[in-house]
Image (cartoon, rainbow, N blue to C red; front, side, top):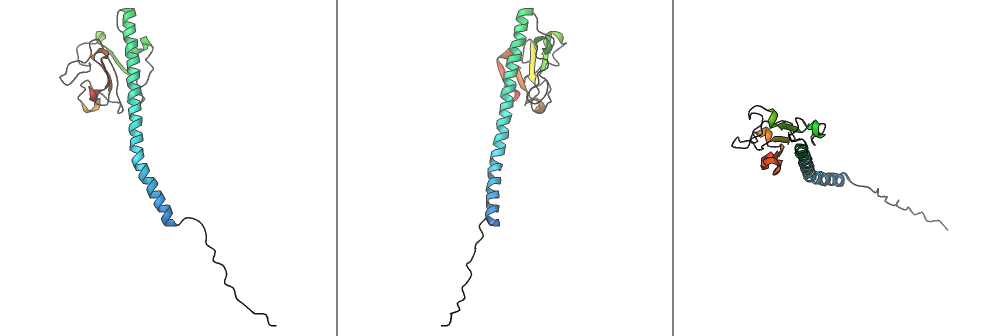
Length: 160
Protein backbone atom coordinates (compact mmCIF):
# COMPACT_ATOMS: atom_id res chain seq x y z
CA UNK A 1 0.00 0.00 0.00
CA UNK A 2 1.22 3.20 -1.05
CA UNK A 3 1.09 5.98 1.38
CA UNK A 4 -0.87 8.83 0.12
CA UNK A 5 0.96 12.03 0.05
CA UNK A 6 -1.20 14.81 1.04
CA UNK A 7 -0.04 18.34 1.31
CA UNK A 8 -1.61 20.22 4.05
CA UNK A 9 -1.87 24.01 3.98
CA UNK A 10 -0.22 25.68 6.88
CA UNK A 11 -2.68 27.36 9.24
CA UNK A 12 -2.96 31.13 8.89
CA UNK A 13 -1.60 32.84 11.97
CA UNK A 14 -2.98 36.30 12.70
CA UNK A 15 -0.98 38.71 14.79
CA UNK A 16 -2.98 40.37 17.53
CA UNK A 17 -2.63 44.11 18.19
CA UNK A 18 -3.86 47.47 17.02
CA UNK A 19 -3.54 48.90 13.57
CA UNK A 20 -2.05 52.29 12.94
CA UNK A 21 -5.48 53.71 12.07
CA UNK A 22 -6.95 52.54 15.37
CA UNK A 23 -4.11 54.10 17.34
CA UNK A 24 -4.50 57.41 15.46
CA UNK A 25 -8.25 57.46 16.18
CA UNK A 26 -7.62 56.93 19.91
CA UNK A 27 -5.00 59.70 19.95
CA UNK A 28 -7.41 62.08 18.16
CA UNK A 29 -10.14 61.33 20.72
CA UNK A 30 -7.75 61.91 23.64
CA UNK A 31 -6.52 65.19 22.17
CA UNK A 32 -10.10 66.38 21.67
CA UNK A 33 -10.98 65.58 25.28
CA UNK A 34 -7.81 67.35 26.48
CA UNK A 35 -8.62 70.40 24.35
CA UNK A 36 -12.00 70.64 26.07
CA UNK A 37 -10.80 69.87 29.61
CA UNK A 38 -7.63 71.96 29.92
CA UNK A 39 -9.26 75.43 29.57
CA UNK A 40 -11.92 74.44 32.11
CA UNK A 41 -9.24 73.21 34.49
CA UNK A 42 -7.22 76.43 34.13
CA UNK A 43 -10.33 78.54 34.72
CA UNK A 44 -11.07 76.55 37.88
CA UNK A 45 -7.54 77.14 39.13
CA UNK A 46 -7.88 80.89 38.46
CA UNK A 47 -11.21 81.01 40.33
CA UNK A 48 -9.63 79.16 43.27
CA UNK A 49 -6.79 81.69 43.39
CA UNK A 50 -9.27 84.57 43.38
CA UNK A 51 -11.27 82.92 46.19
CA UNK A 52 -8.09 82.48 48.23
CA UNK A 53 -7.11 86.13 47.69
CA UNK A 54 -10.60 87.25 48.78
CA UNK A 55 -10.34 85.14 51.95
CA UNK A 56 -6.83 86.43 52.68
CA UNK A 57 -7.88 90.05 52.18
CA UNK A 58 -10.89 89.56 54.46
CA UNK A 59 -8.62 88.10 57.15
CA UNK A 60 -5.97 90.80 56.78
CA UNK A 61 -8.60 93.57 56.69
CA UNK A 62 -10.21 92.27 59.86
CA UNK A 63 -6.76 92.17 61.46
CA UNK A 64 -6.23 95.82 60.49
CA UNK A 65 -9.62 96.75 61.96
CA UNK A 66 -8.81 94.84 65.15
CA UNK A 67 -5.48 96.68 65.39
CA UNK A 68 -7.35 99.98 65.13
CA UNK A 69 -9.75 99.00 67.93
CA UNK A 70 -6.87 98.16 70.26
CA UNK A 71 -4.49 101.02 69.33
CA UNK A 72 -6.93 103.76 68.21
CA UNK A 73 -5.00 104.12 64.95
CA UNK A 74 -4.50 102.07 61.82
CA UNK A 75 -1.15 100.32 61.35
CA UNK A 76 1.45 101.90 59.09
CA UNK A 77 2.38 98.53 57.55
CA UNK A 78 0.98 95.02 57.45
CA UNK A 79 3.99 93.91 59.51
CA UNK A 80 2.39 95.56 62.55
CA UNK A 81 -0.58 93.19 62.32
CA UNK A 82 1.51 90.13 61.45
CA UNK A 83 0.67 89.89 57.74
CA UNK A 84 3.66 91.66 56.20
CA UNK A 85 5.20 88.48 54.79
CA UNK A 86 1.96 87.13 53.28
CA UNK A 87 1.94 86.69 49.52
CA UNK A 88 -1.12 86.57 47.31
CA UNK A 89 -1.85 83.41 45.26
CA UNK A 90 0.21 84.83 42.38
CA UNK A 91 3.31 85.31 44.55
CA UNK A 92 3.09 89.09 45.09
CA UNK A 93 2.86 90.82 48.49
CA UNK A 94 -0.52 92.21 49.50
CA UNK A 95 -0.66 95.99 49.15
CA UNK A 96 -1.70 98.22 52.05
CA UNK A 97 -1.99 101.99 52.26
CA UNK A 98 -2.88 103.83 55.48
CA UNK A 99 -4.53 107.10 54.47
CA UNK A 100 -3.30 108.84 57.64
CA UNK A 101 0.27 108.51 56.40
CA UNK A 102 -0.34 109.74 52.82
CA UNK A 103 -0.49 113.22 51.37
CA UNK A 104 -3.43 113.83 49.07
CA UNK A 105 -5.54 111.23 47.28
CA UNK A 106 -3.07 110.33 44.53
CA UNK A 107 -2.27 106.78 45.66
CA UNK A 108 -5.77 105.90 46.92
CA UNK A 109 -7.73 103.32 44.92
CA UNK A 110 -10.52 105.05 43.00
CA UNK A 111 -13.78 104.01 41.35
CA UNK A 112 -14.92 105.00 37.87
CA UNK A 113 -15.78 108.51 39.10
CA UNK A 114 -12.25 108.83 40.56
CA UNK A 115 -13.63 108.81 44.10
CA UNK A 116 -11.64 106.85 46.71
CA UNK A 117 -13.27 103.47 47.41
CA UNK A 118 -12.33 103.40 51.13
CA UNK A 119 -12.29 105.88 54.01
CA UNK A 120 -9.29 104.83 56.12
CA UNK A 121 -7.03 102.40 54.26
CA UNK A 122 -6.63 100.48 51.00
CA UNK A 123 -5.89 96.77 50.93
CA UNK A 124 -5.58 94.77 47.72
CA UNK A 125 -3.81 92.14 45.67
CA UNK A 126 -2.37 93.18 42.32
CA UNK A 127 -3.94 90.11 40.71
CA UNK A 128 -2.68 87.74 38.09
CA UNK A 129 -0.64 90.28 36.09
CA UNK A 130 1.11 91.75 39.16
CA UNK A 131 0.45 95.30 37.94
CA UNK A 132 -1.90 98.01 39.16
CA UNK A 133 -2.72 101.72 39.12
CA UNK A 134 -5.11 103.61 41.46
CA UNK A 135 -8.14 103.91 39.11
CA UNK A 136 -9.96 100.56 39.08
CA UNK A 137 -11.12 101.22 35.51
CA UNK A 138 -7.56 100.95 34.14
CA UNK A 139 -6.95 97.69 32.24
CA UNK A 140 -4.07 96.63 34.54
CA UNK A 141 -6.29 97.10 37.63
CA UNK A 142 -9.29 95.05 36.50
CA UNK A 143 -7.80 91.75 37.75
CA UNK A 144 -6.93 93.19 41.20
CA UNK A 145 -8.67 91.73 44.24
CA UNK A 146 -9.72 94.66 46.42
CA UNK A 147 -11.09 95.65 49.82
CA UNK A 148 -13.66 98.36 49.01
CA UNK A 149 -16.44 100.29 50.77
CA UNK A 150 -14.49 99.84 54.04
CA UNK A 151 -14.90 96.07 53.83
CA UNK A 152 -18.42 96.08 52.39
CA UNK A 153 -17.08 94.66 49.13
CA UNK A 154 -14.19 92.23 48.73
CA UNK A 155 -13.60 90.85 45.26
CA UNK A 156 -12.25 91.52 41.79
CA UNK A 157 -12.00 95.14 40.75
CA UNK A 158 -13.84 94.36 37.52
CA UNK A 159 -16.86 93.24 39.60
CA UNK A 160 -16.92 96.44 41.69
